[in-house]
Length: 418
Image (cartoon, rainbow, N blue to C red; front, side, top):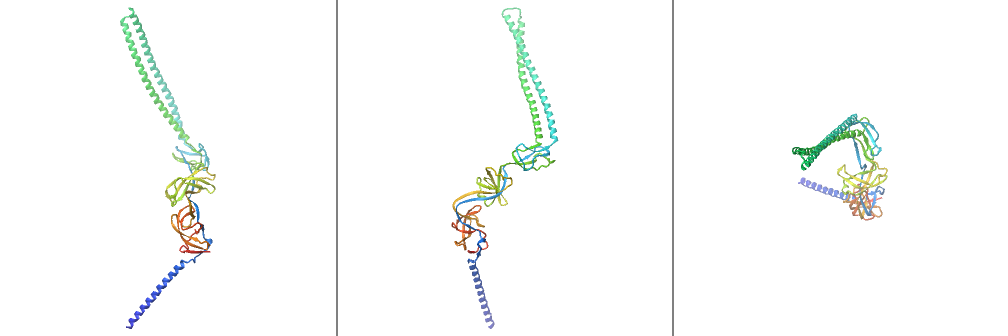
């Protein structure tokens, strides 16, 4: 029986110590929580970034970084094969339309041009001879028509004279001879009409032959002109007033048909290619006004194109620049661009705190009037611009808030500011 009583006493002692330990743990947790919510956290004021809540017109804009690129870029290519003989212009030079950039050499093309010229001269002579022959044939046929006409008129004259004598009763002309002359008149008339038909057919035939000869001659002229153009293409000229951006050719280099010889960019005409973060591209639209900053000057522009593809977390936006270009405008010049999205009248806004997002609920530490304490306040944010964010609720005009990193004391409801 004594052993049983001893066991019961031990159990009672264990339970007693267990309750004591539990109460101690709960008390410790409460003390920690209460101490965490107290305003015993101290921050030096010079370590903080502060911003004052303002009211007025809130300009919403999106910022992008990019470069200036020529508006009109062309590659000068070759339509003939050749070898680079001379390079007259280097990259960076300013040229006008028609300026000679470089020369190629191709002896085969030059020889082909000479042979084609000889063939053309030969064909011109043959065509002239053939046209002369056709003209002679036409004259022969016209002579035949005239001859038959005269024969008919002669026979008709004889017939009319004999008929006059017979009508007067003269016996000097026999009726048989008169009838023979009558037959001759009809025969000559038929032969005359037949020669006229032959003349018309001869004209049609000769015209067709002349056209065929001329077509062959024209074809030869085209071949000669093409050979001339190929030889002229050995001299490469600028196609517009521009700046030579690239001249990748070297002396003696062999080039094929279609090879790019030089890249030209029209001088004084640029567009800006800006990279806008993909989170902000939803507010960008065609036609919006833009201010492009070259760091030495500012240029006005409008949104011309928005790339449909996201690349490395950003979207390319092309800006058409308006007005005269500044003197410092150069291809590939790094620029900043501010795209105007919208303007909101009479609203509260503040410089954007770290980690604050548009159209979201967040918090900020608001300084008291004496500036010795900052209290944690829930805030509703609206739209954002490049540096500022709209305040829809939670703050009042003139409030000063902490916009620097508050992660070290974000669990505190209030902090002391020294």
